[in-house]
Length: 97
Image (tube, rainbow, N blue to C red; front, side, top):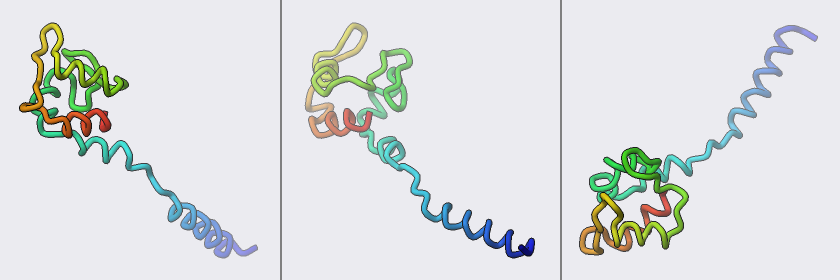
């Protein structure tokens, strides 16, 4: 087989594979989904994505546990009533974490 033909066939096959690749955007979408409340009130202690820093990690918590921690507060962490952190933002942030 001619070397040019072989090279063309290889590049064509690689091009087809490259075109069919669909990277996951789930995490990227989640990163942008955190509320302003989380970014301004929570991230400084719990990390930009809730991975933990000064405060414990928030990833992997059930909605009930996350909600209880937010609404009731914990040692060294104030409570955030619904007037400060809406139920919609709380649920949105929990889903993004």
